[in-house]
Length: 374
Ligand SMILES: [Mn+2]
Image (cartoon, rainbow, N blue to C red):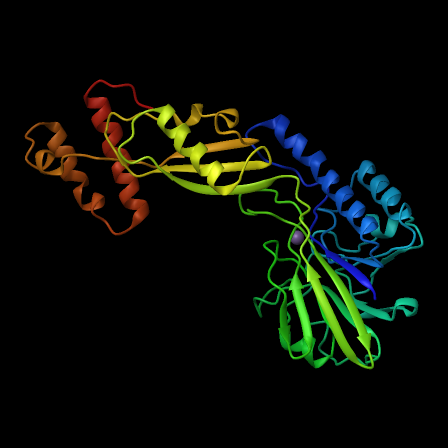
């Protein structure tokens, strides 16, 4: 019963852009740690094959440290085969680590833009794949139907975009998978990952990235572990979703309506952290929202990770001031004039415009009353 681990989009050596430089560096090292965890998992589960569906590296520039790590991890598990399909971030160019590095014998790297086949007869698995040889891959690699062996477990590994026909990153359709009779399609490219889907007799899935790298990649990240069996042409497959991420990015709105101080905001953020089960593994972007008194001051920029019990935090104050509109409307001073000037925008349906006008009013009123503007 072959066991296959499907991962991808690891983006090793990727830079991180947190406001905190030390934490950015820590995250970069941690990404290598994530890779090591994946390799440990493969060993522990006695995976027969690990498929890396593209973007193993973030760019052509791969550090020596990373190359050495790969070699030691791959050679440290000689019973397992490592199958790599270079993606748009790490195409198999002459200068790439894929062509320049001497990898151990259990590492198989697709280097042609045409679909090729790897046969692992001892476990009855055939893996089809191809490589990006430049940053784009504008054709459909399955334009011509393949002749597959129905007695094998047939897997297609592809760094591809099945969401957009006009994509320059290997535009494909699910239908292509079914027509060719694959049993599983191991997809890379879409970092959010996805459910295990099925079309005809073919399962397919995006594994997603194993470690988020920004607030665009939120949530718990991991890979897909597959137990496969084919007997007399009948296929059985089951799937597990191991977590690999060391840290997780999360975003949340925190309602501070009617509240006033930094302490209030911290308390509400902490509540959200507890409710979601976040903690030291979490990079959090919290948005304070709701309607508050014009005097409220949350000092958002002074709220720290330790206050909220997370690894890293960014707090944005998006609260709106609760103003007495009726009073301001008839106010004969400059305050009233200002308010009437902004009224149309304050009542706008455009959320951005409305927020901008509210902020303008908040700052202007604070300035007019001689308050410090934060
Ligand atoms: Mn990627």
